[in-house]
Image (tube, rainbow, N blue to C red):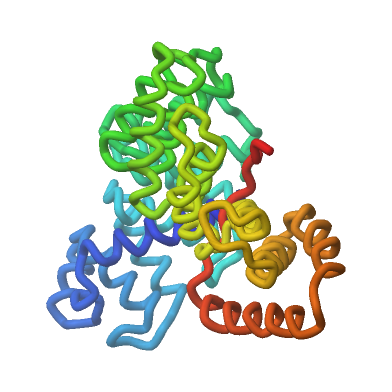
Length: 338
C-alpha cells in the first residue's frame, strides 16, 4: 500500500507541473520579476525551476522558499506540491505533519488531488492518527466533484464498512459512477455485486458485462476472473478456448494465478493441445511470483517429463523472462476460487 501511495502522489505532482508547462520552468527576468512582485503562480513556477535545475542551479532551499511564498498566498497548486515534497521526503526530511498541513489547505479549496492525498494519509495513519472516518470524508469530497478514484474508494469504504456503516446499495451507487467513467477496478467490483446480488438485484448478465469491460481494458485481474468463469461454466456457458484467451492475456502481464490456471489448461488439454512442457513453463512462472501451488504441481509434473522436455521448458522460461522483464505487470494478490 505504501508503494501505491507514493506512486500516486508522484503522478499527482507530475500532473501539476505539466499543467503549467515545463517550458515555463526557468529563471527568465520576467518570471523572477513577477515572482518578486508577489505573483503566486510565478513564485510557484520559479520554485519548480530551482527544484529541477531548469535554467538555474538546482537549489532545494530556494525552491521551498518560492513554493512556500506561493502557498502562503493560497495558491492551491503550490500548497499541494509543497505537501508532496514533504510527504515523500524529496530532497528534504520526510515530514507528514507539514504534508498534512498543506494538503489540508489545498483540499479545503476544492483541489481533488489534495483531497485524495489527504484521504490516503488518514486511511494509512501517516503522520496523523489513523482515522477511517476522516478518510471517507475526503474521499467523498473528491467523489462528489466527479473523481473516479474518489468514487471507487468511497464505494470500497461502503462495501467493506470502513469509516462508514456497511451499505452495499451505496457501494453499488459509487462503483457505478466510477465504472461509467471507465475505472476498471470499479467495473470489477460492480460486477461482483451483481454476481452476488449485494446492493443490486442479482443479474449474471450485468456481472459479466462489467467484468468484460474491465478485461477489455487490459485489467489482468478481470481477465483472469473472466477466464475462470468461462473455464468453469459459471454464470456463462463453458468455453475453454475463450478461457485460455483471457488466462493468457492476464498471465502475460504477470498475474501468478492466471499463469497457474493457464498451466492447468495445458496440462489437461482444455482449449489447447495438451503440452506438458508449456504447462511446466506456466507453473514455474507462477511459482516464481509466489503462488505456492505452482511449485507443487510443477514438481509433481517433472517426474513425468524427459530430460529433453525439462531442458526445453527451462529454455522457454528463460526466453519468456528476457522478453517480458521490462513489460511485466505484477498484479495485487486476490482470492482465487479453486
